[in-house]
Amino acid sequence: MAMRATSKFTEGTLSTLERQGYHFVGTHLHSAVKTCLWLRKSLRGEGNCYKGKFYGIRAHRCIQMTPSIFCNQRCVHCWRPLEAFTVDHDEAAVIWDPPDELVEACLQEQQRLISGFKGSAKTSSELFEEAMMPKHVAISLIGEPTLYPHLKELIEQFKARGMTTFVVTNGTKPEMIRSIRPFQLYLSLNAPDETAYRETAHAHFWEKIQDSLDVLHQLKGQTRRVIRITCIAGMNMLNPAGYAALVDRASPDFIEVKAYMHLGYSRKRLTRAAMPLHAHVSAFAAALADELAALGYPYTVADESEISRVVLLAARPQNR
Image (tube, rainbow, N blue to C red; front, side, top):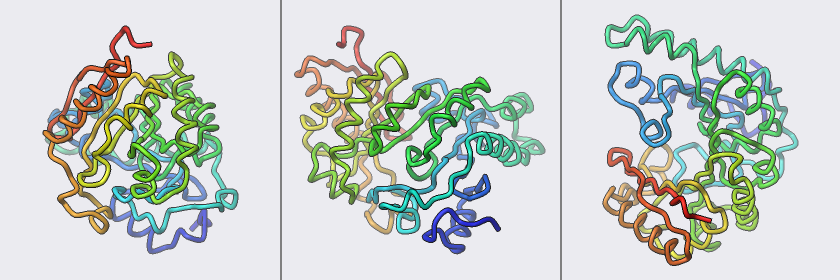
């Protein structure tokens, strides 16, 4: 087997993730692809994920991947095995695969993964043929994608194939965020102030995140920009005015206010009570919208998905 990207990446961890449906691609095994529940449902004509409802993504034509299984934060609500994939100052020690290799590997692995659906009586033959030609890439599967030093080139190569890219970042690498132009850029903002951030993320990048909010503002008109707030009951669903002040710096096109989901390894750190009801998420989103309106930055509820416990706020046209 190929050399691991870092000594923290053990055979046991690899096996665990493979059992959970992660399929590693590339030579140095720092990248992965995974199909999701909504892809299966979409192939059967049984519905689409909230990203389809909000942004027009067709789940059966979407590759869910990451170029970096590693992360530099240890967010308490993360469903991944943090201990195995957290990096501090040893990023330079990682041997990174080139972007052209990853693009080819992701496309081939996605086709291999969905090939098994072809023989099912529940699968639409028309939708299956579409799925074999993916149009979207969600660069958000696991880890922090901006740690991958060739992210800009990776996005450009997917784009050259006529594919739209959706990048989700924790905002700790503003210099990388400044350089990339995905179709849609998410920044996860899971605390209204530094104290809550340290409690939630167990990291020390608060100033970097402030810089990234400013970069997001500068990218207006160059990419669709989204702030995502993951709501954890009893931890970060507080101080909507603090969130509003941070969102105001970024002036995003959309804000996703979404419930923490009690899944995976997060169950070792949080109880089920930390997962707020959709009604509580809606109320918090409304409070945030009120605070933004008071700052002269009005948002309105554009959509919501009760099953996913998420509310989408959209900037009004008169927004600055």
